[in-house]
Length: 217
Image 1: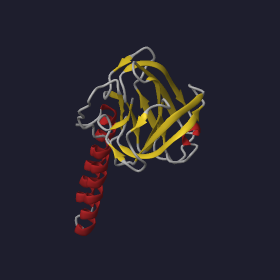
Image 2: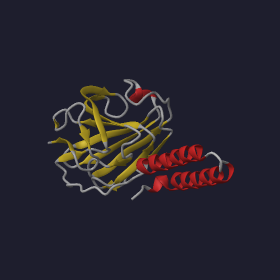
Image 3: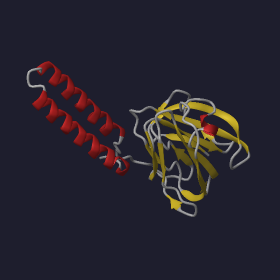
């Protein structure tokens, strides 16, 4: 199963791969070894694109008492920080880095009401850069939940990510684990949680979006 955001790119990649293999067959008949190399490269690129846009079904244990991972990836930050854009006070930050091979669907980490949704143009620093959260292209979304109150998550573009897709609209009721957007080609998501939240993950832990529990109350 593939995400709808990848339909155009997947189709274009397959068409280009077919054109490349056809041209190779007709133009390089006397160079079988080169044909096989080009076939392998074309197949590799199709495989990478299909991997990137896959959208596996996830089984979310829906609960207002915990926050699930919004994306697949590795936990790279767990710390108390000052959040300057929306809360303007201290929060617990948990950041998840996605490599180009991770599933890049963004899912809602908790159910609730969208209180804030804003896009910020910016730079394309590598996603793990300390200033990526403030200077890179990003979207900031705040979900108000019955148990956690307001929780902020931020989709951040990386050095390769050139497009962030955000489905969250202010005033919208959302369900934990459902699609919240997509980030194309390598990126990061930051969560900003209440200071009394119990963090259930550790640094460098790999997490699965919509299933692994990040924090609880």
